[in-house]
Image (cartoon, rainbow, N blue to C red; front, side, top):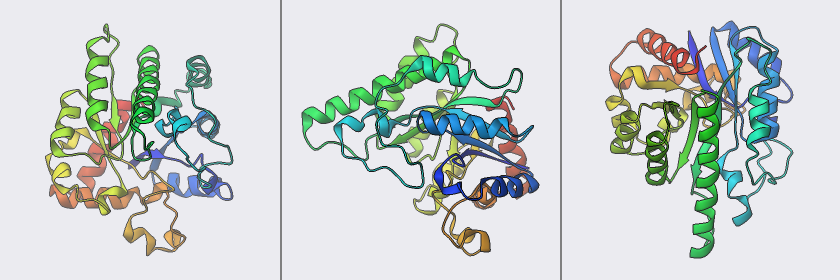
Length: 290
């Protein structure tokens, strides 16, 4: 068994064959956590999760690229949705209501995410850059507060902002007042030293197809197996071997391709595929309480 802890089947890329993609994934004994990027995609993730008795879960949150959108020119991703980038403030009550909207006892909404900091696309002027960063930090902190209030883990996105993000997590944990902050740094791209800081804070590390684009072998070797989560970030970051299969010819990633991440992690860590599958599945079940 495997769990794709970060997928986006709630995006437009699967509009034509969503049910078929989920069926073949579950048939392969792979579970899915669909992650929100804004309110519309978060709501869609919840709706999808509620259709299945087991194996499909949801996370709700506002992606940092929207948090700072008023300061940069950002195009809407057609694979994501048809909605304009207009949600530039975090409505905590709205997301809280959504997070609590699942059927009683279903436990299908398992995290707040994806949230975090993203400084890849940023303003050119110093003044706007500082405002841009402060807006993202503010909204990230608000969403961490919601995760703690609801006792849910956070699924954290970080691009070119590890220093600031680690500072916020340390500050948030120091002020937690017994409301434990936990989660995963998804699509990890930092240094080994940054990874160790996340581990020291109790966070899991998520590896996906970015490992085929960046040399993250040392991070994978150094990360304890009981702190690794596997993910696809589909429809993005399709593994090279997946492209050679009939299912991957289009270049669209799918949860079923998480097996290629597991095989690669196993090779790098000198573990068996079965060991990696079992360990990472138990890690995901523990963090997300599924």
